[in-house]
Every structure is written in C-alpha cells, then in structure tokens.
Amino acid sequence: METEIGPLLLSTLPFILVGFLAQMIDGALGMAYGVSSTSLLLGLGISPATASATVHTAEVFTTAASGFSHWRLGNIDKQLVRKLLLPGVIGGVLGAYILASIPGDRIKPFVAVYLLFMGVIVLWKVMRGGEVSTRPTPLFPLGLIGGFFDAIGGGGWGPIVTSTLVARGNQPRQTIGSVNLVEFFVTLAESVTFIVSVGLSHWNVIVGLILGGIIAAPFGAHIVRKLPARAMLIAVGLLIVGLSMRTIIQAF
Image (cartoon, rainbow, N blue to C red; front, top):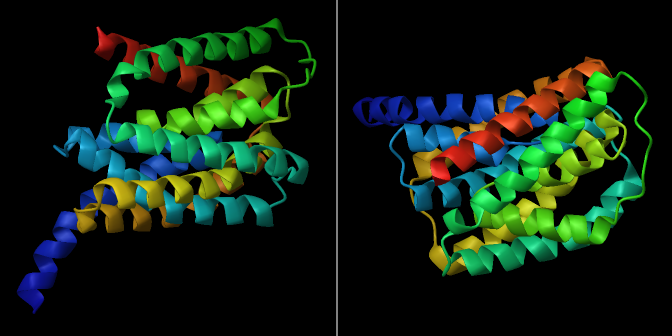
C-alpha cells in the first residue's frame, strides 16, 4: 500500500505547486488563474485539451475558497456581484459548448490584443498620477464576454472583467474580490458543461491544483486587502501586458 501511495504523492506534488502559484496570482490580482496554471501545466508536458479541462474543474474549488476569503475580509461589492453573475454564467456555458468543436487558440490572439490595450490604459492612468474618474460600465455585456472567453481561451474571466473595471476607475480591492466571487459560479457552470461534453481524466492533476489553490486562497485575499491601490494597479497593468504579449507572440 505504501509503495502505491508514495508514487501517487510524488506525481501530485508538482501540481500542488502549480495550483498554489496560480491561485496566489489570481487571489491577489483578481485574474490569471486559468492562464497561469494552464501555461505551467503545458510546461510540465500536459496536453492543451487535458490542461483546459483539469484547470476548469479545479477552479470550482479554488474559486470557492478565494471567493469565501474575499467575502470574509469585506472585499465584496454586492451590487457588482449581482450584475455580473447571470451574464457571466451564460457566457461561460456558451463558450464551453463551442470549445468542444472550435479550437480556442484561433480566438486567443484577438482577446490578447484587447487585453494588451486595457493593460496599457491601466498603466497610463497610474503614471499620470491623478485620480481615475469612474465611468459607468455596461456590466451585462462585460460579464457575457468575460465568461465566453474564459471558457474558450482556458482563462480570461479575471483579465477581461477586472482589467476593464479597474481601467474605468473602479476601486481595485472590491473589484478584485467581487470578480473572484462571481468566478466561482462561472467556473462551476463551465465545468458542468465540459464534463457533459468531453469528460474528465488525470485526477492527480486536478487534486494537486485543488490542494495548492485552497492553501493559497487566504494568502491572496490578505494581500489584496493590505496592498496599496497604486501598487495593485501597477501590478495588474504589468500582468495584463505581459500575458497579452506572450499570447500574441505565441500566435505568430
């Protein structure tokens, strides 16, 4: 029995580390769990299709832990959560259904160009040094697009929704917390769709991602509560630009 448990633990440890690192990024900045964890899994030799399915399944648990942590620490805007929830779920289900027949890599470059633009806007506003004036954001189409591309591209809910809201002047701490909470429901809807469409495998990868993400979730929520808004804006902007440039370069 011990000889069976030992290799199983060893095969799971790398994915615990992947889940921990990805959730620390996502919990602190409100984005990039799917993008970062998928990239790390591909680097470990996991196929793209398997990486996408396992990441979304693991995200059901990690986003639940992250959303609960943000709720406990007061990083939530209830009105924002209500307005993003329904369109996010609809977009996620639609995207997951389409992904079963259309490769998401064809759409990723277009999303990356949009995200690069949003990242530059965030950094530009920070460098100006002035207060960012809040502008009303149409939340239904934003949630719909964010959920759709999250499913299609293996990640994108946080980068699209958080970056858009922050670039338009929304308060970073409550925006990040609210988007993280809604992400649980979006990911749950996507995962059910993926399970019905393509099934699941590689359970050691899923378990590792879940354990690592749950361990990291409280730390990420504390970081977003303590970090100054200006520092958070710079980190968000740099992360968006870096991930977008990477996706664009890979596409060509």
